[in-house]
Length: 242
Image (cartoon, rainbow, N blue to C red; front, top):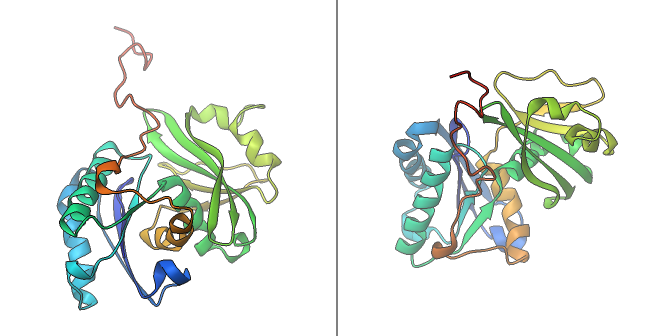
């Protein structure tokens, strides 16, 4: 099984081998990273090819794909989904598991921090550029994640205003926040925050739960999750005087 995420500035790729979907545990996992963003279209396929070569495998040995759905970088998401469609069709319409990139961030943080692996909510904040953040919340039970608050776009000040998004974090048991921001924000002391870019390895961990829940699509149904449809703002929207 091959997995990749191109929602941020770095391409994350991973190869899982063994009875992965049936047993929910990896026999062997290899990971790779490459330059992302506008260069993802040139770096993603070589990264995946490299993982297969290191494992002594060929494309015909790939039986499923796991793809970071977004939200995130517009160009990166288009690259990820276009490649998934092409590979899925070329490999005999192999199944594709779409994993929200914010969910992958949350589980990446769980893998980095043993204290976070207990059941409970994890909140996520990702730089959406244009002065906005993507946010979401997930309730975890082992490696299964259930959306607690669906991905949305917020203005950074809203994270600290009463009744807004951070209130959900503060009301959460554990108050755990996975984030990927530039520049990194200073979080209130009550929040346990972990920097956690979405990793393809974390997506492989989430794949069995998606498989059991029949959250699998064919090549024709591979679609990115943008959340924010407007990728550019007018001068008026940015508050710039004409």
